[in-house]
Structures are given as C-alpha cells and as structure tokens.
Image (tube, rainbow, N blue to C red; front, side):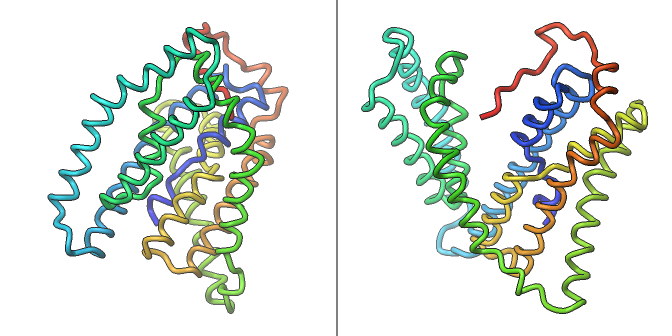
Length: 289
C-alpha cells in the first residue's frame, strides 16, 4: 500500500510538463528530478516486497539462494551481457539501421531477462527493466529503437494492458457505505500523503507556496505506473480484488485531477512569465514515448 501510494507516473508527468512548456522552468526541472528519485525508490521498495512475499510463499527455496542467484544474474548482465549489447549500437552506426534478425535478438534478450528474474522470485517486470537499463544509450540509437517499438506498444500492447486492468477491476466489489467510505479515505490519504507531503517538503526547503503547491500537484500524478504496481500486488496476493478496485479508482482520480489543479495554481500565462532562462545543459531533456 505504501509503495502504491508513493509512486509517480514519470512518463505522464513528463508529458504534462512538455504540453505546458514547463520543462525549462524551475518547477518543471524540480518535478522531473523528484519524480525520478521517487520512482527509483518506489521500485526498490517494490522489489523488496515482491522478493520477501515470494520467498515466504515458496519456502522450498532458501532466501540466500534467491539473493545469490539474483546477485549473480546482475553481475552477468552488467559485466557480460552489457558489453555484448554494445554491438547493437555498433551495427546501427555502421549500417544506419538494424535488420529484423537483430531486433528479434534484442527482444529475446529482454524476454530471457524477464523470465530469469521471475524464476528467481522477482516479478518479470524487473528483468525487462534491467535489460532496457543496460542497453546502449546513444541518442540516435535510442530514437531508432523507440521508433521501431513505439507504434506496436502504444497501439496494441498499451490498450491491451489497460483492458486487462479493467477486466480485473470490479466496482461491484465495493459494496455498501462502509466500503465506499474506505475508498474515499484511500483517495484522501493518497492526495494528502503525496500532494500535501511534497508541498510541505518543498516549502520547508525554501520554495514559495505557489511552487510548492505546483510540485505537490505534479507529484500526485500516478497513471500507468500505479496500475503496474497494483497488478503486481494482486498477482502476488498482497491486496484483495476489492482493494485493487479501490486503488485503481484512486489512481484515476489523482491522475485526472492533475491538469485542472495545475491550471488553477499555475496558469499558462504565469508559466510564461516565470519561465527561467536555463542553459541546454541545465535543462533535463525528456522525449516522451
């Protein structure tokens, strides 16, 4: 519950900042930096939770075996697989494109990494994330790979994932005034903890109230990342279907309220007036997928 309450949808946040021309502002740069640190921390906490729960669920595998296997896998990925993956970028730089066989091999690397973390007790999501993290990061190469995978991901896989989450969500499980009151409390706690907590922290660090409120509103965006965590929680059995449905409603409410609240606190004309002149090296660049 704590991990699910604390997550921020980094891609959604970046898209909002891009659409509102806030990436070059002090608030936009601060929000991106905070969201990055927040998400890394949240995923580390989630990895620990999944590992502990699955070790207790599968008592036949000792914890030291699981940790040792994951440690060896991480070393293998960083010191053996990562140098080999640089050949993908080398081939691209030489030919200006990748063949279908090379792209298929890249997909196989991601799938094998996902299956490996699943076997060792972590969710397959962490393996696929690790494979992406160790891929070459040349700007042109990354843009080329995004162009190759963006269309099938956005057009096919992403709608299927939302449909899958929708099929697992049942509002009928939230029965009676008591359960609806619990749902309302979850939403209020999520808003108070993320929006209020970020706002108070920013104000304590010396930001103005308007900037602090804007940061809290932006950090309160949850979106897709929240749904990923909730589905993992439901898969490993730490949250019930009814609680899953409540948390999905919370994710929707907190995501939809971001833009209207941000417009009320930080209207577009104020953003243009307060936009800071940052050098290209100081601006955190992000190309939303």
